[in-house]
Image 1 (cartoon, rainbow over the protein chains, first blue to last red):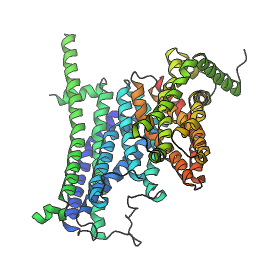
Image 2 (cartoon, rainbow over the protein chains, first blue to last red; image 1 turned 120 degrees about the vertical axis):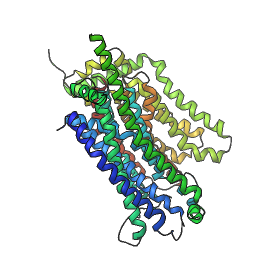
Image 3 (cartoon, rainbow over the protein chains, first blue to last red; image 1 turned 60 degrees about the vertical axis):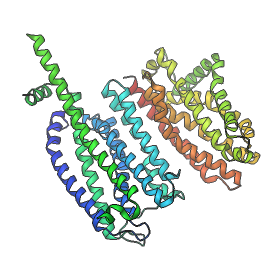
Image 4 (cartoon, rainbow over the protein chains, first blue to last red; image 1 turned 135 degrees about the vertical axis):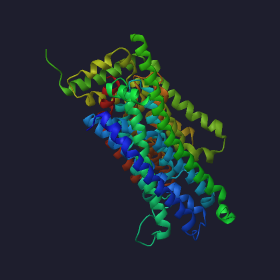
Length: 240
Length: 55
Length: 227
């Protein structure tokens, strides 16, 4: 089950499903978010950045947690596929973190008047970006990629303490960043017409990550197994 | 239509956000595909060379 | 031949590292000198406004401590790695995490403790009010071991790499940030006169947490780096 060839083939079949459902939810989410959802009472149309910013931030944390869990499994059980998952997720995770930070600035400038503030949430999200970059840097610096995969397993695990800090930062400190408002009940709840596109975008980004991590992992599997017979047969088949 | 593009005056904040998201989504999609192609071509090249050396 | 007990092994390793460091006394001064110089540069760079200097004082001292710790981290495993001793340690019958703890303790005594001792001098240079100095010292004595502990994981991951130093900073600084934030917050709060039990408790918790977890992570990292 954990065999690389099996993974390569199964992943190859799964990717189109992820791709199509990603596109559908993306189109639905953006359509609802830009055309159907009404302007905000206080922020007008600038709040629509939320439909990019919030799902991107969710992904930045979600992907890191996936990496940390994969890291734990890799260290304990030494499964090749979980080892590959970490580096396969790192660049897309870093990208989402970067996206969250930049769209946050673009949203914050008209809202608070500042491109950046050093409050707890923004600072810890920035640290998350550095953690991702550190993982990518360490992996590329170590020549033996199997050793590299285990090294970043530890790094991913060590850095996971940052995730609760990001998540709870708005509760633990007085921050400029708004507190959690994605609830269905309670007085701070978002209206449904604004909530639906947000959830659609959240699901869409997750499906995107599913597709992308599988694509990246397939490439890594090929690279690692390049001298095996199944890969050679595969290449001869493809190159005909 | 122009009202929509104007985004209530916030156009220069909203559209770059969506634009950047688009760029990032495309880049992270294309990159692993190109990587896979590169690896396959590289392995094929080495296979051809090994075959030639065997003769 | 009798094998050493764990405590003896620990003490022996600690003494060895301290003696080796003492033999290179001149080098010991480097992180300390760096700490003092960097701290001194700030008033010169910022200008002579005493209020401004006082406002940035705690932050500057702590950032300088952070940088000094980073600079000195490499010495933790470098010479042992270079002459093969590190690989010998990995073959030990004793739990490597405990041996690692001895090395971390030695490292802290060599690099962190001097910072702690130099702190009152620096506090005076940066107009930190005398009442806040005990809090500053407390944050340093609680925080600098955390820097050594967390740093040890980073060094262990990069010890085999050629350009390890640059990556080390990238790996370790994001993890240092919480320590920096809570330590400086504690000092600034005490300058204003408000009790600092919350920040100090968090620093103490970080110390205990890293004391338990870091040696394990470092041992695992060494195993991976030396494989």
